[in-house]
Length: 143
Image (cartoon, rainbow, N blue to C red; front, side):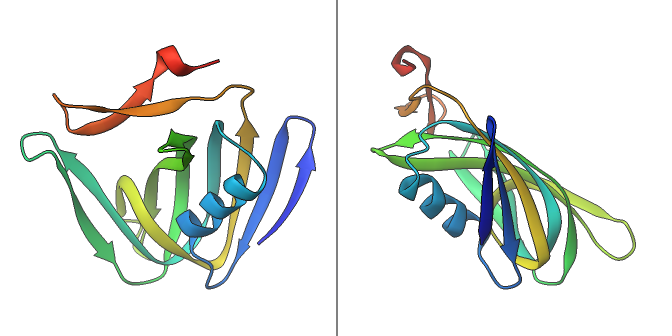
């Protein structure tokens, strides 16, 4: 991973073989980023994505185990249990242009993944919500 800080943005480039969630989480922890917006594009060797089943209160994942374009990476960084928590959604497409999307569990970079990380000057925590079974933004914690 290489990066460059600009005014209001951090530009990050992952290289082939690097895990997206793992590396971005470590980056945020190392650089004290508690809240941020995430956007990116690139390609993945594989991706594990899914959707949340509200009735079961769990994510159901499917692993796509071939090289695909990462046509859209969107999400945010907040804090959960005092650590950076990434909530990311992706769209990926195969060689025929068929797309798949959902909540990103993990992905490994193919050629490159280019990320715009926009820190937000606040601390935003997540709190467990019994009704949904999710750790939701605690907007009262934003300071």
